[in-house]
Image 1 (spheres, rainbow, N blue to C red):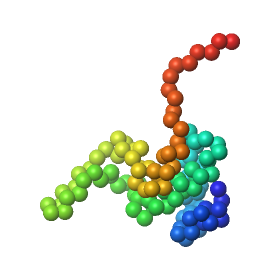
Image 2 (tube, one colour):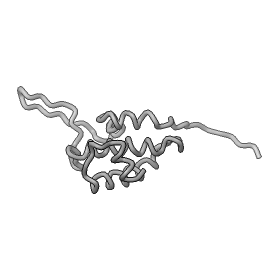
Image 3 (cartoon, rainbow, N blue to C red):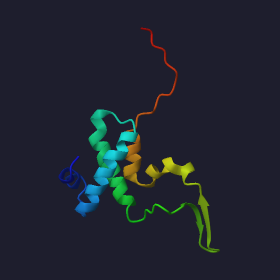
Image 4 (tube, rainbow, N blue to C red):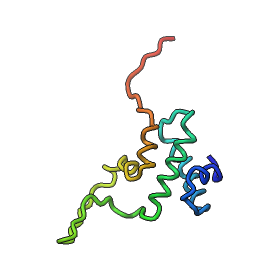
Length: 113
């Protein structure tokens, strides 16, 4: 997917530099998922929009906040690694992207030659 195609699909995203960076990141990240070839462009669009939506609030060094309580100012942090797959659930674009991922088949196979 290129910049013009993405902007035509999602005109609410305006910053070309941020979009291009997110597109590049999405194209790299998408290789770690099992996505059918005929859905790669759509998946790239969803993942790019997901990354752009997270951009204003994301921070590499921020811990994963699991609870905030205002009346007594209580904050609870969780293990970020344990919640690594939850990052797609934080936006509707990420949830749509997750629907395109094929389940990984793990098992033992046998081949006879």
